[in-house]
Length: 328
Image (cartoon, rainbow, N blue to C red):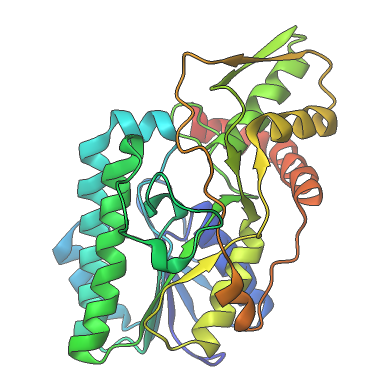
């Protein structure tokens, strides 16, 4: 991949897609096209944003014929937290399968040089040994609340693997842990725990609320990776890695939800109490990724959690009106 290569970032307006574009531009890649679906974007700063429904096969087919991307970052997916995963089960499996099938198949048909597919750590079995090695995939049942999403992501990973075997494509897959950072989703109906906690604790602070309700017991542990570290890793891997083994991308350490909330409470400056609602689901107790394979490829993440929380909260404050437009 060189500076003139035509690069398609699918899901360009989301947290991961926008981070990939930021990092590509920092590395002098400017021949970039991204898609949007419901929000209005135009060509800005040498990035061509095109309205494209990735679930529509004919639209994706026409896009590939017209744009002819050489490299593809698959950062597009229907995502959400425990509540939305468990509520919109059919939508999660249908939309993600459609997106994946279209992007992977038309990348093959249009001779894309390399594609990066993003899975998710939630596709591993519910009761995995910790830390989770890549080899543990499909060794026991999944967590019920996000099973449809997980099955779709497993299908995408296996699609890349088998297109490589049958057609000789160079489609690599990565397995990111829980992500956070600029341009996150702060809608409490669909957000993940990191963004939800920032919004809840911030709003409790400015509204002088005496307490904040947090779903679950607070005991489950989660690993968090700043999205800029992920984007940097993806660009590094698309340049250097050609294997058929998918790769875990994480921080290598985890923290309980209670500890995370207390850390955020301190950084945000909230003086009230945290109330854990144990009638709500905890989800998988722990899903810490083993990142030894990533390290063996000479890449390690850099942004520590406390630093990342401060940066993400500042981004939230600086863009709160824009984020609230997305929320409302």
